[in-house]
Length: 357
Image (cartoon, rainbow, N blue to C red; front, top):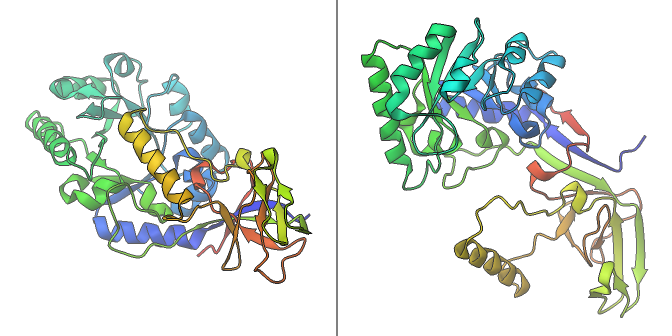
């Protein structure tokens, strides 16, 4: 059966990027595969990194269970506290704890990683309680590590947060607690070399992308490509409209192609991941204005080979139409590459592993 739309994930590119990160940081790497492997496929990403990573990082116990069911036998660290730590231990997973209640629920035999809050503000024990908390974990189970998370590693708050965590580490060592420590995400791995400690927890860089505020001093390989087959091609006369609301009208005879993807699949969705504020609203308005006036090229397009085919009309739920007037040879069955925020591409669209090295 010919697929109508699919994602190809280049496993050799994932492994290549891991090697670049590992060489740069010079310490162990926890490969973060949460959120469906940053859109690349949870199991595909985990298998790509499992052999060389110190451990794999996920957020939810369901992700860990999926990996175990798929036969992934690497160390798995669940980065967020879980409601049933006993189930995590049964799955041979390592858990994170960041409060007195969570520490009290740690099962005997667990490998527990203690979160300390140095400024992120969402998880972790206070810095002033770190020694007491570490001893409490160690009295119940194995204290596998103590870690923190940066709120803006490459920004102004990064150095201060690092300094606070260095104080935490000194207090642990003075108290005779030798647990490994880690703090760096992708941004910190680039911007704050002192923050690498015993291990880094990296996601974004492994997938060939730069983190906010940072740029890798190497050339990564992009492992992700979303494709769709053209399902219809037609010529429309001047004045004809396309799409809901009849908002787009042809100025001349135009050859258009329709693809079976749309906003429900994640095509050109914009994640609402920022706090509502005047500053953020102004930024969003500036982006829209720049595209409308032609200062910035709109991303509303797909690519046939290396030729850009702009979207005409509204993007539908599962269909989109593009202008292929200047692209010869487009017909039903032709394949187009679909740009997208890969994290938002519908997980039910099949991820196909290619290029395994």
